[in-house]
Image (tube, rainbow, N blue to C red; front, side, top):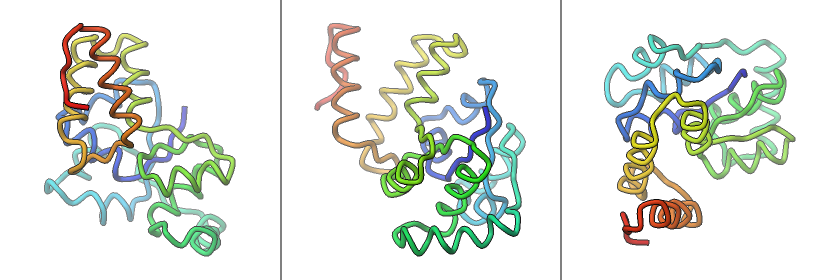
Length: 175
């Protein structure tokens, strides 16, 4: 599967110390070369580390470049990098991987399949690329950092808490 991603997905995985996990799946992850250079600055070397893991930098075609301006007109709340991720997904038929609320909404409005961090984690666990323990640790870390570098919707964080409580019988977070 070909996936056009934005920066916040990689920030999520960096924050929960699982940056390499998405690359265990048989997906190809693409991101604008400009976005890699300009948005993935912290920690230093993050962009280079992601490229080494398998993130594929791409250059927009001329058509895609001009389509970014059209997307920005329709969705002025998006950054140019988010608009580029959306255009790549729409024009090339890729999945859009983002946790950004505004970008998710624009992607859905544009008829693009939109997925996020939790989808990647679910895929990893379902395909046996991470253990159930690693999966649970990732969910716990997402909740621990939610509201800071990670911004999960309240409904999602509450759902994670409920699932963890049901699976373990012990509440792991305060929801």
